[in-house]
Image 1: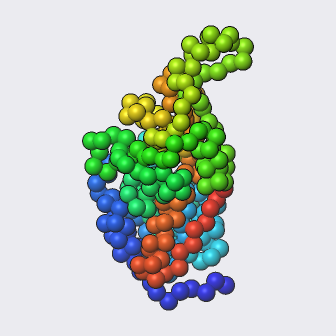
Image 2: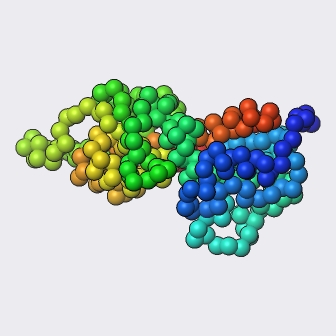
Image 3: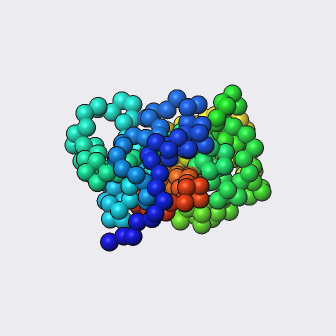
Length: 276
């Protein structure tokens, strides 16, 4: 039996605090931010994680948590509305065990202190200097600078910080079967050091064109599509696909630490391994 803490808060109080801190109402998002499932009981223990998968719910049940806070919750735009199948199983477990589910998507990406982009930049030794899209008041993508370095050095830094080797697409096309002259023609980006970096965690690979337009030497995100390879080569920008999950662990973890300090309730970050 897990010993419960004495301090309690309501799901509504917790959500209000997070809504205000993350300025959640400023975002037009793909899913509802805040309280998604009300477990109907006081919160004494919280679990945080990247995605509200069944494995995370089971882990929360095992330690008798009353709330789960995640970056990827439920009820995404375009998905079927009925709470059946896999979604039904997840929601049923939450309700049966009185566990509230609270989720923050874009507000957690964009926060300048504990957001996913901010925490990833910090982990990689990058200094955020602006927004990928300068007109945005709450940018979900950023531009950062670093000490001039080659791609091998940046790969080593990413690998150490995220505990996985990123997939690197060089800013030029190379083929050993090409003649030296043809290689020179294709390698329009030339050999360069990386100093100005675009960054947006998760599934933001299509912002690579904007990163190139903003004069970035490299672009870092989580996922990669087939088209991304050609974009990197033709735009002359190095691309680093670092994993959707891996690039979005630290934001929700930092939010949990903030909540633990503010409300004096135990918060446990549980990392459900995901290679994607």
